[in-house]
Amino acid sequence: MERAIILAASAIGAGLAMIAGVGPGIGQGYAAGKAAEAVGRQPEASSDITRTMLLGCAVAESTGIYGLVVALLLLFANPLVGKL
Amino acid sequence: MEGPKIIFTIPIFGGLPITETVVLSWFIIALVFVLCRVLTYRMKKIPSRRQAVAEKLVELVEKLVRNTMGEKFMRFSPFIASLFAFSLFGSLISLLGLRPVTADLNTTMSWALLTFILIQVERLKAKKLKGYLKSFVEPVPFMLPLNIISELSTPVSMGFRHFGNIAGGMVITSLLYGALASLSSMLFLPVPLLQVGIPAILSIYFDLFTGFLQAFIFCMLTMVFVSSAAD
Image (cartoon, rainbow over all chains, first blue to last red; front, side, top):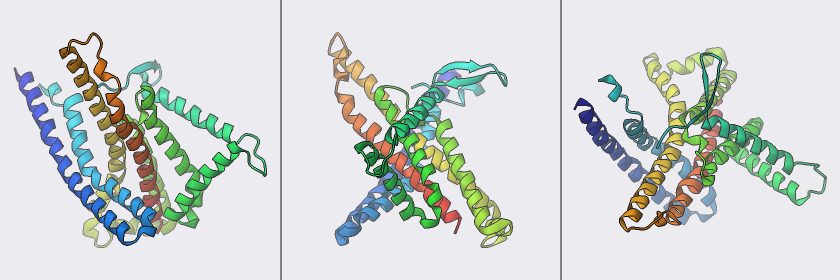
């Protein structure tokens, strides 16, 4: 019984952890929009702009990836089940 | 989804498990080595087609390193190139149906640890011991714990980023396979016919695009962190 409760709560927790994906989505969309503006203003610098944007997107992504790692841990390597 | 399978165990230190990841890494190392040897075999003044490919690749990496790190860090370009090749092949190996090497936290975390050591060594070289220690108590000594945490979080975030992107793609792909299999059994198909073709579209994004982008980003972040540590 306790095990079932822990498993159910872990599944719900994994789902909740993925709400973290909202932030990077907004942030990366904003960065991409700004990059599109910059390319529109200065098309000759597009390769530099793309590189900077990808780097910024990668850094902005970290929080979402942390959420994903927490969700993966809860689903596949659950540390709570062993604590019964 | 499961972790990497253990192929065999070396009986030292109480059993050293050799996983799928390690064996595939050996294959990739051999592949990159053979590729380098083949491309640079019998180099001539007037390049053959094979040698032209090798020259183009080297020029590409050197241009990237020069633009990102500056002229005085050109000695890093072989390291960046090999990191890029290892990461790219390690992710693209999933196209052959094997487990991507980079979907194992051990792989990406060890690369991130390597970057961390490089950052510290470069800073120590550039600022000498006194300046190095002083950089932790800037701007005020109160910031010491925060500076240490931010220094330690660099490799953690780099390792988790690469791992999370590839492993997340793997989870989504395996979920899609499961969904297509149960959908085909609902339609009373004798074999899971829906699994043919449909996952390939997802594979373009998760295997090709993400694999390439993460290799690029890992190298870019390494270059940026190392060169900014030395300033």
